[in-house]
Image (cartoon, rainbow, N blue to C red; front, side, top):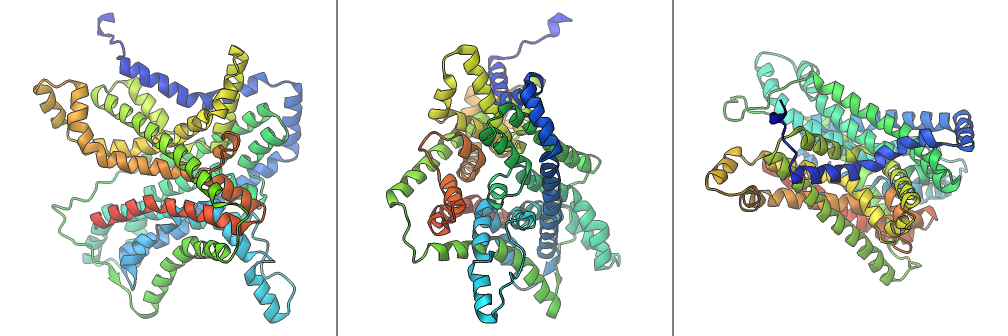
Length: 539
């Protein structure tokens, strides 16, 4: 029996160690429930009677609102551009991705400046009508946050639902049309049921982004779990309570992931076979008012989610002298670029290492490590901040060497948080690249006497360059836009574009914040451009 046991390879053990490093901050926060003193328990009980119900109700209400808003916009837009033909459809099918480029907190800044009581729209209304009452409730509210998140996160739903409709439903709808099924019946019984797994997956991504948010919640002053965690740590100076709140937020993330998994567990569909499919998808041409309505419904999310916020920021920047020198903008840009570049290279290297070992050795230990690392993107940044700072505090207490200070002043703590969250992004792209490399190439390389390392560099790497570049770009942009972890873990006097844009807008200096915010939006257009190119190739 013992002769069948195989010791893990050195590469497997190394990747297992790296996996442990990446997941340790998530594990260590659970220890807070066992080491809390009397004062911490008293504070937690007091919060449970006062603010914790508000945190829970606000977070749940925010998530439900985003589900309705982002889900309806994404589903309707994807259905219209896939099933119907109307004026502007071919342009709108990729324009609908543009709101992905705008971070939610930047869209919140723009709309607050535009829609608040002292903003240009209500000021113009008062000057024309003489009325003094506000036109609508304050945008800095839970409802306003739901609107901002829905406008910036619906592309997750749109992208996945559109892909599902194209791959799974359109040819079946064509067959149903030939059998005499009406349009409404085809949508209700074929298209939307088959797109349900994609809809749930898109909503899960939107909900995880909502749970992880700190910028919008803090700027709008709404009491979510992420804002409460920061307040417990930085304002109340209670790291144990912050860690305990983080575990509750993690439970919420696990609920979302479980819901997404259960929703698609029993659903199995075969992808469309283009070689044998004889029914070409013919979009239903809309005429008259219906065509205008379809164009309006698909144009509105683009206007509200990208065009209008960008125009507000450009207007805020034009004709105003900033209170900071251009040299400082260059410094903020270099800080952002250096952090994003270093993290992107490290994340892609980790993803390639996992992909190579999984290709050569499909042992359970490596698969478990890769799957665990792949869950990192679902972890809220506020949770990672608490976990990393708790880990560094315990490391200082154990070694007495002051390593926590070194980790934070050198930026290694921040890069650690980035790697935990965004290695998963690189991993998905590399896995997609490996899936397109047939195993027969590995077998041919082994037949020719090549080692595993030589096979990687001579066979795999040339075929993985495009996937690696895509992974590098995606991680780079995600790091550039990341706010909560950067805000808490950045070294002293090492501000980034995201941090500066947030701080200036929070101080009601939108004119000063406009340029860093627009720079982030411009960088965010890079992955959108990649998606658009991919969509055009498929079409």
